[in-house]
Length: 432
Image (cartoon, rainbow, N blue to C red):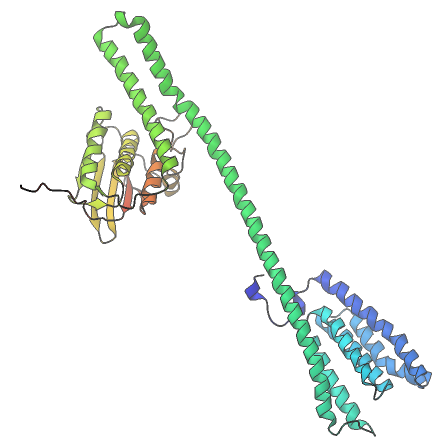
């Protein structure tokens, strides 16, 4: 329960069954103790024993009702009426002794255990009615207007009730604050625990992936180097070139893996003044993609001239390089990846599409998590650590953009949304 939801009027139903049980038991015990006390006081003040017993019969009846298997509010009202009736009997036994009126204040404090506004209203109303009737029926009234003084007595009881309600409300607010802080602490502990578990999972994935992805190219490099070292003089030129090319390919693979890992770790703060021309970077990346994979068809680039986005040029270069590398790896053999871009009212858009396997939405979204691939394990058909698309998302989101994946009609399209920017100002030479 939040602080703002604490009502200004106490509601007895807010008590648990256990709380109400022990509170009601205390009130009933005090009410039962009044029975012999009233009889004894009546006898000591000159009442006959029979008359004294008659005085307590209504109180005994209300005690029986309070102990009956009724609803909680009915039990609370019965015991509360019994206690305020005891106050009325004491006032009757000591007419004119207004010190006895303090019994009302003690009773109100006791019935406050129920934390229910009707019992306060009952105490106030009973005090007014009882004092007014006693003064009105008295043969020797102590005041000119008995009901005015009865209202004054009721006002004192009301004031005490109001003070008790204020204390109750402050206590409920403190309890609500404690509960809220406890919930926040529990949620924080759960969040920390979840993050620790996620960190442990990522660490395990990293160790497993690194041990596989780094060992494979290193093994290839070592094998080619040993072959060249021990048998290089017996190999023909074509074999030596093939081994050297294999070394360079594996070195490039290692460099790409390390670059993606370092970028993912450093991509936290964007350059506020960074801008990049999409068409120029796209043409450059497409050319490098063709050089790195000469066996693959060339990339088709369709980007509107003059399209400029708010992103650092090297970051855009790595984003497009990762997307094209992913398209060439996972696209159908012989198909041409398409790199397109332009701008609209929402900003700058860039898409990389390839024809290949169709992905469901859940799998497509999961590919942007670190160390995730469509096929995992030692039997997967493509190299990589599953960091390329994660780096794409990190870099794009750092610069205020978004990444979306669509898979339909046998085509997979990754769409980037970036903030539009003005073209960079180029210095021009002044004629002398």
